[in-house]
Length: 511
Image (cartoon, rainbow, N blue to C red; front, side):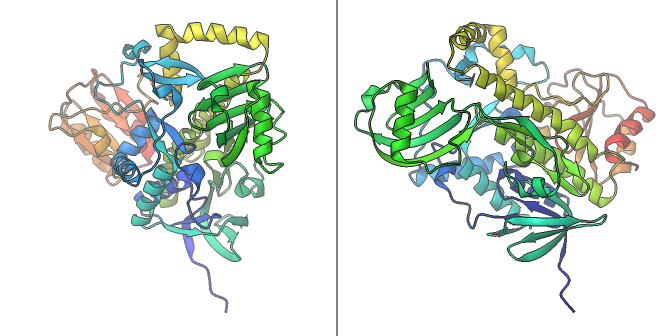
């Protein structure tokens, strides 16, 4: 008789940051996890600095903090720097004013951002933004996933699958693997998405973008910084880091080899100079194609990260969007597999994350519109520059770029519901971020009433009960926090038992 393949709770296609973070989340619930990755090893020069630099937004930073990953990332960064890693900063970091980010290259600055507009973000919270490389993030997540017991197989890209009512049989590297669920985290050209029959709709590209590292005979012909020209846009960082956009309808992306001669031709066209490229050290192309799956679930198959949505890398929101998918999905799928999920919990993954993805795609499209090489676009750019320099303007752009505006429509009357929980500091010195390390929900009782403790005990194993005063309670009495750090329910008054029972049952099932 043929050997029966091992049945995993979850098979994940793709060992990028999203797939690895999902593996960690699922292992928190003690589920068996297999990660299948096409690449034979994780190493790529494009994942290191400077091209691998990524900005982490506030929700990502908070998620990493709640799982104890921020210290690991800082340790990995120190290790990379001690090994002589080239920690090149973007050209706009060498400025007198501290930049907070940009929109289509138009900067906003920290000194213009009015943080008083965010009453539920406490002083002393995690940073609103930080930088790391893809190599550092993947290294930390892979090490954590492996230590937690996830199985990672490289050189085994998913080639296809079949699903039944009970499981999914996945074909990779000439073998068959069986999982109760399959999650596609296998990038923008996702095999899981295509095989799974997901509809993928959106807008086609207007340009081919280039990120290159070159040597030039006459680099003085290029001015450092970001420049819009009558034929496109380019950013130059000395000694030879260039990003440029050629509005060719995306025709060159992945259709021809990237040669020194071609890069020189495009650079001359976009910059309007006769600069000479003598050597091409590293190059990649990208476009502004913006597509999204209409649903993130089809039976026992789910999508996350670039498999669910693709857009241009402008503003660096793609990684944060994918990691947000992972922390939203992980605990919901775990509860579904355990059998204690309330009805519709897994479907809330699409209903919550799809609007966030659609918003990011439109944010990307809006930046493309502001980059087009036309006189009317340059006129619009001047207006945006004026607006972003105002206090209200900078605050608005900071909310979007830093992820402060993240909000799920969960109903409820309190404005904190659907937002990231503030990092309250309890009287004994503990902070909320540290109390979410185990991946359980939290029942915060600032009134120290005995009754909620008895009620919360009904969901033991799914909700941790925490009572006591906080340094700044923001006037709150009771707060129910989901495992992903999102406030599910909150009140300023003393709740009755029925209110607590209804709120807990909605997110954590029957007691």
